[in-house]
Amino acid sequence: MSIYFKETYQRSFGTFPLKGAELHDAIQHAAEVGYRAFDTAQMYENEADTGAALKATGLSRDDLLITTKVNISNFTEDTFIPSVEQSLTDLQIDKTDVLLLHWPAPDGNIAPSLRLLEKAAKDGLCKHIGVSNFTAQMMRDATSIIETPLVSNQVEFHPLLNQDILLAAASETGIPLASYCSVARGKVFDYPLFAEIGATYGKSAAQVVLGWILQKGVSVNTMSTKRTNIAANFDVMDFTLSSVDMARIEALTATGYRIVGKDLVPFAPDFD
Ligand SMILES: NC(=O)c1ccc[n+]([C@@H]2O[C@H](COP(=O)([O-])OP(=O)(O)OC[C@H]3O[C@@H](n4cnc5c(N)ncnc54)[C@H](OP(=O)(O)O)[C@@H]3O)[C@@H](O)[C@H]2O)c1
Image (tube, rainbow, N blue to C red; front, side):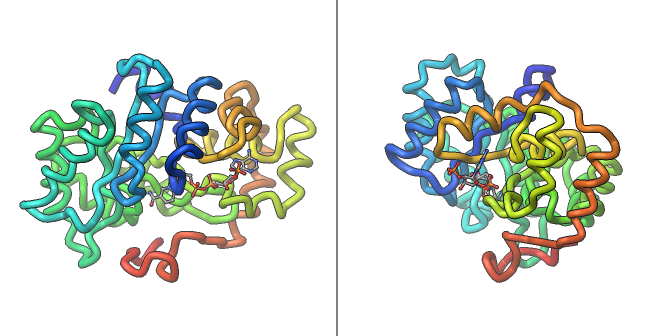
């Protein structure tokens, strides 16, 4: 994994649930403020729009880190590789930088889809592979099922949810975490603590939240449609939260606010 990858992947621009002109404008703004990592998925049905919007930015392909995710409906021998090839066609690229399994297989048997993911890498369809929504045990199991290193487990991660079990699994397995729902889809703004802490660093509440995630060793994935929010979310590398402030934020993880659970996604695993 290159240093460019490590640094760039720390801040990805998410594309769900955007499509069409709204997605085009958001990607344009994101590229202008400096984002080079972009996150899409087969499930979002916006890979073609994402590919067109990225092309329109005029950025060199070599500078971009493009992540897409294979939908569970494509976890079969017959459909996995063709579905990735279709993603590449839609994205107008010949390989993705990161290819993730969007969810663990609903029956809990993660081996077949992991092996197909590894095959996609060996076939040259992606540079790196990873997973999403894996539990700690699945992370541990994955390392003994395939040999290719996993560059991320993309999971719900924000200060209103304790993910210590996954963080411990990340240290143990060497599979880094990446966040989604990083600002808990706006729920974090109900808590004045973030703006209060931000005032002492000259940063907004959202920037404090994202800074906290980064300081936990987790890459950040955020989505916004607004130019000012997009710019703010990218501008999070020039401050360090004190251990006292980290602990004040940490206390909120006891809230246990999970957005993407079984009520939203019936095939979600039993999360840690
Ligand atoms: N792997 C998975 O299963 C999975 C699941 C969910 C999401 N994801 C990925 O993760 C990305 C991010 O997650 P998410 O979009 O669900 O949640 P999120 O980033 O927590 O929330 C996005 C919402 O927060 C608002 N927001 C963002 N930055 C803000 C700021 N600085 N100030 C105020 N409001 C702000 C945005 O509104 P405005 O547009 O008004 O700024 C938007 O409505 C997705 O786009 C997707 O790519 C992956």
